[in-house]
Every structure is written in structure tokens, then in C-alpha cells.
Length: 90
Image (cartoon, rainbow, N blue to C red; front, side, top):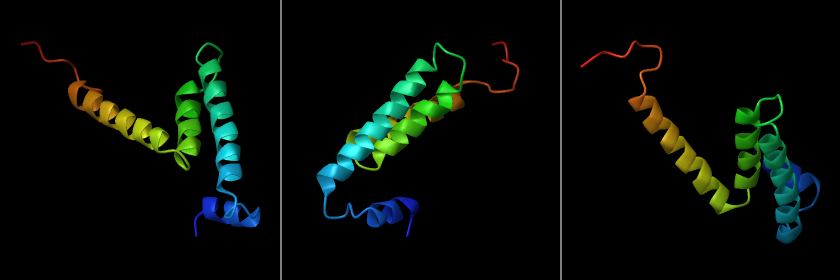
């Protein structure tokens, strides 16, 4: 059993999906907004925003799609960009 299922069972939220979604939405949106604030403040915004999206993805399909799309874009960028290699002149 994963941590999320244990948390839901501990607080008795298996029978209350709306309350569970509301709690996850409030926590996830708060973390995402904090991460967006860290883009202009000193801090690890690159880590905090995906963490907030991962929290939201436990309940919302749009957040899962956004994470998948971001992973695809990151994979495409990694294939195109010569990370750690010198660019070869043509």
C-alpha cells in the first residue's frame, strides 16, 4: 500500500471523494503558487512546481497530462541539446 492510500484510509476519506479532492487541490495549488513565487524569489522553483503538480496529479487527470507533456518536452530537449558536449561545427 502506498503512502497516499494509507493517508486516505487514516483520515477516513475513502467515502468522501469531494472532501479528498478539495484537500488535495488546496495543498497542490498552494505548493504550485509557492513554486511560482520562487521563480522571482531565491529558491528551488524548478523542484517545487513539479512537486505541486505531482500532488495535484494524485486526483486530477489534467495535472497528470501536464506532467506527461512536460516529460515529453524535456526528453525532446535532451535529445536536441548537446549536454556536456562541445557543439560540432557543420
